[in-house]
Image 1 (cartoon, helix red, strand yellow):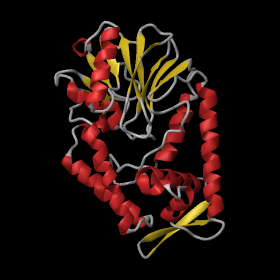
Image 2: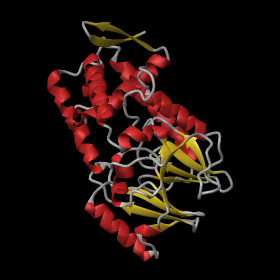
Image 3: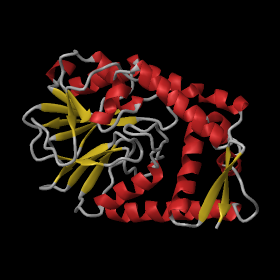
Image 4: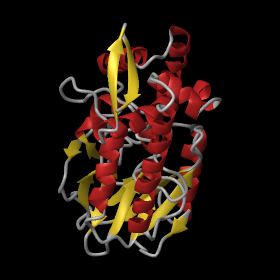
Length: 320
């Protein structure tokens, strides 16, 4: 737990069962005592959360509202430990994930299964996608009290405005205070690691979202704002946001050029490339590694450096 330079904001660090490690949630003293993000649904996280609140003179019952930056379980799971009447705000795209809507989850499974088959993942490795179900045992079943969108100022948290930042998740937002130039960043910009733009089903229409391209645009969007600090979802605050954003964009371009070099050899499926990039990790984290691979291919295609052709139900990527 850390009281930051802004004495109205307290960072509370909680353990997660995920490879990313600990997650940060933030208690903000506005007109309403506001929790930004909530942590994973584990007894360990809940007990530690209560202990850390007590040290600064609060209990969970003192929290008057929660704002979530995105729907991933390590940011929303503890909502199930709070009273159901507690207001919860976030982007409208959080809704089916938060309530764990069965029809939506089935749509997600079908979307990923069909997409990965097209991208060359064989039936044996498709079984690894069972990891997705496991992740949401650490999520919640809650209803959004009201949706947030670009430019909204949050009731009870005056001075903080919503900036939509899709990429890491379609539901992702950050909160920006134009007076102090502070950002509540969720997983949009992390100091030590690059956020992984994750493949998700389309929330509207039928066209597949291209999260790497969205993420790049969302990063560039923050370059338009003066930023004094980004309070991150994992790890330390970022005090040189613009410099880090440029570094992240440059590194992503370098990764894409590495993928392009693989296509000098021959046409390949996305799964072929994934196994070349992540020879051991792909079996442990198929969703993460395929999302990274497809992101680089989307970037190369958007840059008119590669093309693809579907042959016998499988997509082959070629260098232009």
